[in-house]
Length: 86
Image (cartoon, rainbow, N blue to C red; front, side, top):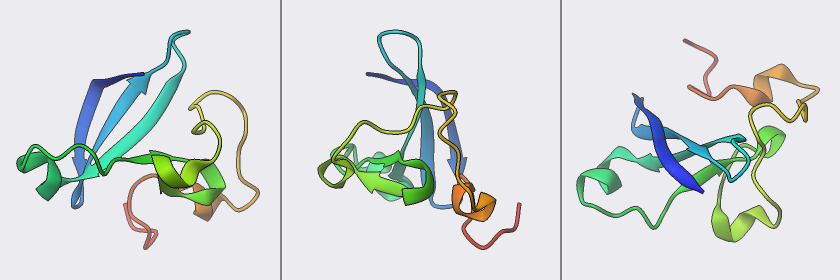
């Protein structure tokens, strides 16, 4: 996985686009405080309806951005703020 293709600060997290071997895109984020300290070991991967999960709790590959595995409840798939605001 090659992270850092696109990086943005969203709230208190640094969110990055990671690319797999076949060019599939995945989202990964870190608490901004961890990034400032150089601690990248507590990353969270976007897992669709399951939200943001650590690698230890994924139990399957993260959800790719274009693999069509959407959520029935659109609110559960918001990538930014969890309170529904932009």
